[in-house]
Image 1 (cartoon, rainbow, N blue to C red):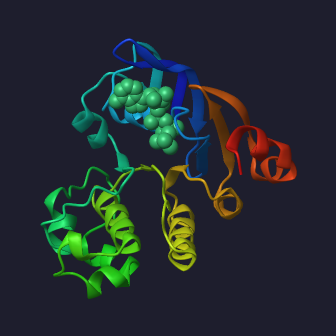
Image 2: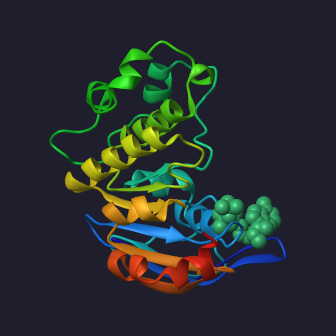
Length: 233
Ligand code: ATP
């Protein structure tokens, strides 16, 4: 569904991606792993049109999207849950959810406010609270809900459970598992490898802007050296 090939992206004269190559297949959970500063967010920004790669191709459903404006890319069915969640602090939960909502899919049962609130009952309880009044976990549910309101075909989560308490993290994992069951394609960045290997199909480890290892969950968990060498955990 999504395919990066030889992607190179720079910040001015500082190059961050050196030939990034990865694939996210339809209905699967794919992860992008690596220590801080290795290029995960740069990869996400390149996919989403926030940064313009100067080399390589990014294909979504077979069409090249690299270099297109972010709103054009989003319209094709790519949803982003950004690092740091970035919910609007002075909008209510309801306003956060409907402010950017759109249905770009042809799905017979699209995501709408009711469906998101059924999916995250906690958000229903907080519907009239401001974004700034939410806990980290609630903000993450809101950020995921906001992305779902765009009815994406593929959703990218940058630092999906960063800084969240174990119980909340568990709830987010369970919800992501349900989204996978429903057929959504997911690209996930996270550091909680043991937990995410339960729901993920394929993993890419990146170092200094390029892929240094790829494999399935069984291969990842079978090799503790990998974690020590590339992830520092
Ligand atoms: P983290 O988990 O810390 O966000 P990351 O793997 O997402 O790490 P990136 O944020 O993609 O890493 O950063 C990749 C490289 O690009 C790093 O060397 C970083 O210093 C550099 N970089 C990131 N943002 C900028 C920027 N705005 N200007 C210059 N260099 C940047």
